[in-house]
Image (cartoon, rainbow, N blue to C red):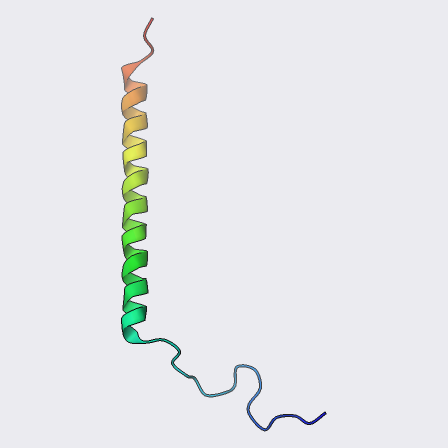
Length: 58
């Protein structure tokens, strides 16, 4: 078995595998998802507090 002459593992030169537009689109998508998740959690907490403040009807 003959070993390849290139570098093994993570020692090789770094190569860009995606465009900057794709990277920016992924970052924007993750930011929107995080913001919407925060909004959903906030609305859930506020509605739960409002429901608990009303009390149980007798």
